[in-house]
Amino acid sequence: MLISKGALGVTTQMHSSSRALSTLSSSNYFSKTRSTHPNKTSQARNIVGLVDAIDKRVYRWAKGVMPPISQTEQIALGSGTIGFDRDIFTGSPSLQHLVDTYEPKLSPEEEVFINEKVDKLCSLLNDHDVSMSKDFTKEAWDYMRSERFFGMKIPKEWGGLGFSTHAVSQVLAKLATHCFDANATVAVPNSLGPGELLARYGTVEQKEYFMPRLADGTLIPCFGLTGPHSGSDATSLIGSSCVVEKRDGELGVRASFNKRYITLAPIAGVVGLGLNLSDPEGLLGEKGSEGFTVALLE
Image 1: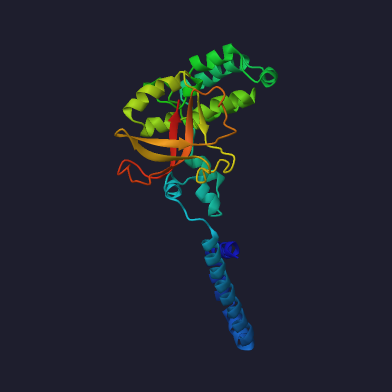
Image 2: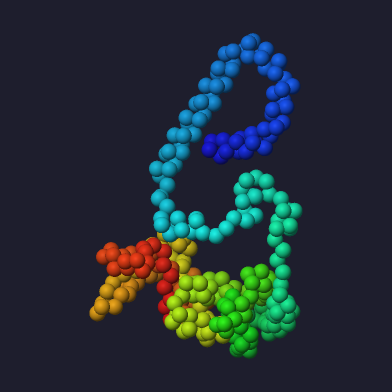
């Protein structure tokens, strides 16, 4: 009912002008109808009022059974920007507007990388052999490391390539046409890896240690989010938690976790762990807050 009511609201707004014209052209008809069938008009109003009352009760019931939104979810909902998805949810998507608004382009450096480096990597891979051996050749591994395939999103000042998201997407699309395992292997460090998080929020000490090693493939990262009881839901990390503690005057966390189905885990040198942080003694103060937390385990 809630959905149908919202849809009717949109329709009313979109066709308000046409409805106004219709009302003007047939006002006499409606006046006659009202005088002739007053009971039907009253019944229609009663039905609308009943539907509205039912909608409100259903909403209150649904609100009561839904889990509360956590602070982490509130932050996530308030982050980012609204793009083409806004047009979709308003019911008026425009392909022309999408074309006029977004014009993804590759830089000359990105084009060379895709046309030369990616093609070279594809020539080193045989999808059937990779599937049978469950691994790449040493030559392929060394090439991905030396050409910074694992550091495409890491800024150049830290040894990465500093590519745009569009360029990374094009690289992955081309690799997927030749070897899907290569696509996933390159995708994880450039999407789920901690490089971007460190670049934006890491301390100087963390950046100096991790960023160069992530860029050249010395440390291949994986993201430990999925658990046996909560799947990949970052807001429901059952069995994966950490508690803030203070030992010998030093602040730290005690973590316990159970993860599975983690891509690249067998070869990873650093794991980004998704944990639910709690601070029962209030030791963090203004340095942080409870909720979803990512910890790096080397």
